[in-house]
Amino acid sequence: MSDTPLGAFLRARRRRLAPAEAGLPAGSRRRTPGLRREEVAARAGISTDYYARLEQGRQRVPTGPVLDALAAALLLADAERVYLHRLARQQGRPGPRPAGPATVSPVTRALLDTLDGTPAFVVDHRFDLIAWNSLACALLGGLDTRPVHERNLLWQVFCCPYSARTPANREAVDSIGADLVAGLRAHHADRPGDRNLAALVAGLSAESPAFGALWAQHRAGARRAGVAQILHPELNHDTFPYTTLALPDPDQLLFVFLAPPGSEARDVFRNLRTEDAPTRR
Image (cartoon, rainbow, N blue to C red; front, side, top):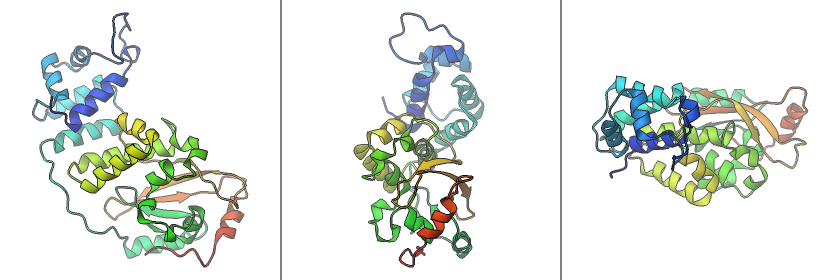
């Protein structure tokens, strides 16, 4: 069997879909979790052999209607349906994308400088932190002095020595870790030949079982607003809401942390300002 990203995704989603969710009886003879291939094929209106070839990487790219039927059969969310189409388009086209050093535009730099009352930073498609304001530098522990591999939001969530004290960040659903991994999956579909991205996934999987478990779920989709646990000696609470904004710069995302309503976080943020926490340009 020649495994492909499309086949791996279909297989993972089939195994995660409980028969009851699809309106099927659980039965007593099921030896594996999830649906059988023939059940997915029947729900999608295609032959079992055709579906098996898709999972095994022996079938050419399916048509749009077939992909939509598979998405409906597997009860995929809208973001996952888009991801399925992206995987199919990339199948058979694994050429790497040339990429220069990640930088932010003067407009984005000005936006960060304007957000001087709250921590904010910009990440690229690997979630490398490529620009930040002084509050983000202070809140995340001196980003300007960290080694390059630590200036990565996934590393901060899954591999930082203090991450064991923030388990809520790595919950299987509704956590910043789950959202980041789903976002990385979506980027991965567009860059099947990106060696740096593949190395990041391999390194995180080897270092963090939590990341490996989330990566194996094959969830994919856009990032969103949420909450994150951040430990800091000057903060009397550790949970902060955040929101994300897409930027005009290709594949860049702005993270902004917010003060919880009625909290003292705004005053604490002001106290975190220091001349020793420069912005990265």
